[in-house]
Length: 382
Length: 82
Image 1 (cartoon, rainbow over the protein chains, first blue to last red):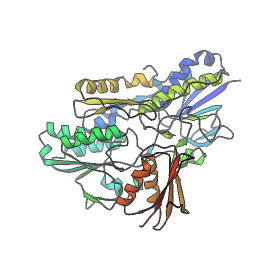
Image 2: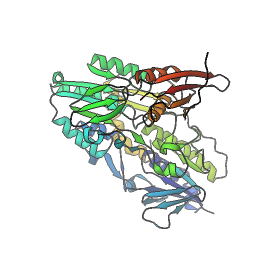
Image 3: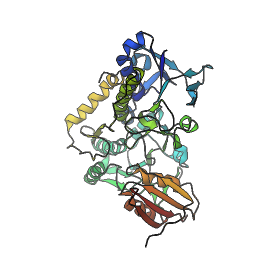
């Protein structure tokens, strides 16, 4: 009998997993013992870390997109471009928007990422920019290009959010960008964060706080935006603070997927999983990787990448009737831009406190080189 | 002397690391009326200090912090004031 593996979501996690599985199980797939299907609601993948560079006019959206058909091995996997509208874990069946028959599975991997929910904060949609989506990044690029004086506020409203280093990178890049253009004296920059320090990870918070002081970037902590008044250009917080802005760049609240909640796989749309096996706690033969998985680590592409490797290995063992032994240790790797021509780098696993390296031009080039070679990661090659 | 309060709402953040428990609490406080008693359960020792700090800053009240040594977690009891 053929074992049907269905992967929902064609981002980093979904494509790496598809390619690792088709590589590992090529013999079984060719023999008809295993089928691998990737379902995504668009025919393309977008490399989201590019948005940060789009905002500063350093990349275009065209460079950030590739057809999924070019990224996965279609000799050994089927690509279905459709939207999953329901998950029935009892009957192991997915309903689809276009295909009435839906899809049956024996093993299901959810990798749908996270969604933006700006509506959770009144006035945010009208009053704030963001660089967490293609349209937002392009609109912010235009707003920044025309901004010559005033107060830019970068406000981290939602935690957890995708790419946790990006807000720190944004203000450090903005500082350097305005300096290069001779406008820094006319531009005030403020960074706000919801908790008592500048970042969830203590060592990154300490590193960023020191840099902010050096570069004259204001820091506001315990800052949880409750409302934005787009006409008066004021943010009001739960803590009773009011902050004026001329240009607001906000990290909007994030949510998981309603599909997850409706299927009973986790409250708030994040799939509750064992942090080491990535198996869903509330259903059999269901896994989650990437941002949609509720894991005690960052929502970062590298987490999706390494988690996909673990699930590929565990699934290969399962379909071969072996006991899976591979586990995920929370491995995360992040390059962090600290200006327009320097960057640092951190790596950590569950429970580790990362060491922030001295920023250098070499690490900046390494980040740019990785951005270019990312498509090899998606193909499962690096 | 510590005493336990009867919570109206429980936020179970056991297993989550900082800033998870505080963010779970903040997300819940946003949706609740004044006078609601919340119990935040956390296994993260720093949260037992950081959470009362935020509660004070936001103008709510920390009623008690109870350590459940045998089970390895803390209960932080908070009452919303607005």
